[in-house]
Length: 250
Image (tube, rainbow, N blue to C red; front, side, top):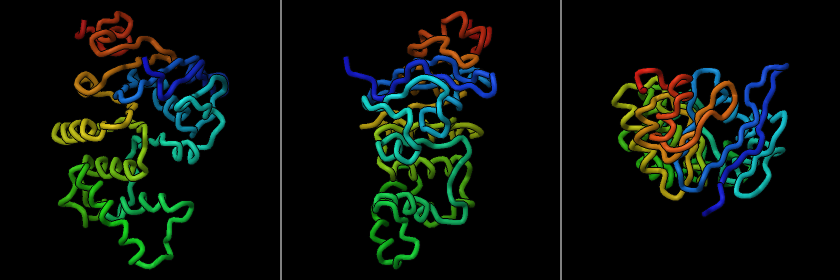
């Protein structure tokens, strides 16, 4: 059996006496789409922030590809190949789709984003940017300012900018939140396309998305792991039904 690409041991985060994440042991296997689910306030986003180093744990350890990343900074973790998106779309509203992806690609040049360089230098990144935009189904919007895109297409563009960093593992924070049914289907299809060669950990409230997309699920409640397994396993768990899924799933 292969080793987990991402794991935590006793991961805990306290805020002035309130325990938001409480002794979480998590194992995400390479190549899987793994979901974190749970009711509001379960600690899912806090857990994401700990994994990507936007918060420091009170106790516990985090390992990525066998390396202890507990004390590392967010940018250093991203350079190792662990990259996240956010619940609120984080694109530059008045840049085109192409320009947004190109900004992300500039990170590959090192510490400089080349804002003062000639357009010719930046245009060398255009082909790769167009390929990534095509990968997320936005080819017809390549020259459209992000502010003019629908919410679902903004999220797709954000995934393209995340892919520009060439992550080995992506963390997606509620990728279908607030979307129409059509946009949800588009994002689900996109996640299926981009999973090849990488691992995905996602926070997601839409249970039909989780059921149809995810290989493994961890259910959190009150900061603790309540259940783990595939959808069939966790959906039959009595405490999960009570805490999250609701009596209609019994």
